[in-house]
Image 1 (tube, rainbow, N blue to C red):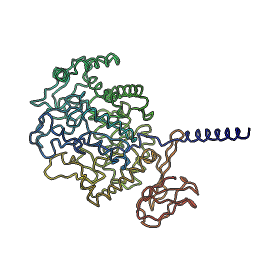
Image 2 (cartoon, helix red, strand yellow):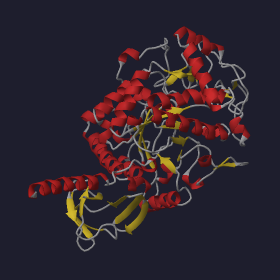
Image 3 (cartoon, helix red, strand yellow):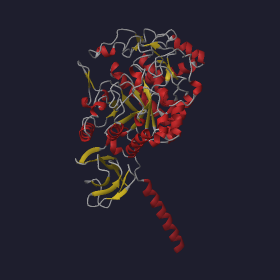
Image 4 (spheres, rainbow, N blue to C red):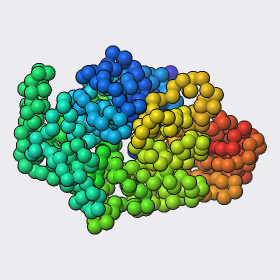
Length: 547
C-alpha cells in the first residue's frame, strides 16, 4: 500500500508540475512592437538565376532601373541561413511580387522595368522574375516555423503603365487623366499620380466585366474557368458588386487564403477614398478567418490580420488624422491598425529622451490600440536620416529602441550605400544588398553586430516597442519600459551613452533587490543590490533583462 501511495504521489506531483509549467505565459508576438525587415525583392538576394530574364525584358535601362535578379528563393536562402533570426526580425515585408507589366517605360531618369513591383499587370499571378507560388508557400511555411510573419504589399490604386506590350485596362476600370495636382482631397484621388499610370476607378460600384486581355491571358495559361469560378464564388459570398476595386481585393485576399500571409502593407492609401480600405480590411479579415479554419495546425496565434498603410506624409504628430487641407481623414478608423510614420527620419535628430518620451506618450494615449511604423531609410524617401551612412550606430539605437514598430530597410544594418554614382532619382536608394561587405569588411561586421543585439533584444521583449516608457536617470541616461498583456508582463531597463568599463545602473522600481539580470548587449550578468546593478563591460550601452 505504501508503494502504491508513493507512486500515486509521484504521479500527482508530475501532473501538478506539468500543469503549473504549461500555465507560464510565453512571450507573445505583439504587432505594436514588431521588428520588420523591408526588402525590395529584386535587390536582396538572387537565389534562382534561371528566372533572371523573363518576358524578354532585355532592353538597356538606366542604372539600377532593370531587374537585377533578386527573388523569393533568395529570401528563403537567407531565412535558412538564420540571417533574419540573428537580426531579431519577426516580420518580413516584401515589395509587390505580383506579375508586372512585361515592358518598361522611359521615366526621364532612364528606361525602367517594373523591378520594384508597383506596376501590376495581373494581380492573380506572381511575376516569374520574383519566383513561383510554390516558392511563396515555402517562404511562408519556413518563416512561420521561425516565428517570423510575412507581409505582402498591396496596390489597389493603380495598374502598371501602358506600353507597346501592355494594354491599358478598359475605361470602366481606369482613368488616364487628369494628373493629380495635390491641392485638395479630391485632387489627390480622382486623378493619376503621374503621366501614363492608369488610376483604378476605386470610387466606382458599377458592375464591370473582366478585362478582355486578362481573360485571353488566363485562357492561354489554361486557368480561365478556374479563375472565373473563383470570382463568381467570391462575389456571391460577399455580395459586393463586380466593381474594379473588389476584383482586386479578391485577388489579393487569395494570397491570405492560399498561403496564410499575416498582413498587408498598403500602397498609395490617400489616393483613394478611405472607405476602400475599410472594405479591404474586412475582406482580408474574412480571408484570414477562412485560412485559420482550413489550417488549424498552422495558426500562429490569435492576432488579427494586420494592415499598415502608406499615407505619404503622415507623421505621428498628426495622431489619428491626415490633413488634406480641406478635409481630415482618420485612416485608423478606415482599415488600418498602423500607419507608416514618415517623420521619424527627421525626429531621429532629437535626443533620446525627447524622442522616446514623445512617442511613448502619443502611442499610450491618443493612438492606444493602434501604432506607427518608424524608419530611418526606405525605397522612396530621398531624405533618409543618415544618407551618407555616417551615423549607423545611432540609427540602429534610435530606430530599434523607439516605441512603435521598427522597419529596417534592407541594408540599414550593413550600411549599404544609399548614394550610388550614375543613378538618378530613387534608384540610388535601391542598390543591391552588400553581402560581400558583411563577409569581408570588419567595420560592416561591427555595425551589423550592433543592429543584431538591439534587434534580438527588441524581439525578445514586447516592452521595447509597445511598453510604457519612463526615464530613470537623465545623466547617464537610463530608462525603463513596462508592458502587460493578460497574464504576461515584461520589464526592461536600457542605459545609453554610458562610460565603458565599470558602471552602476539604478533600476528604479523595475527590478527588486536580489533579482538576477543579464545585459543582453554584452552578455554579462549581475544581481540587483540596493536598487542598482553593477557591471563591467566594454560598451557604453546596456540592455537589462530579468534572468
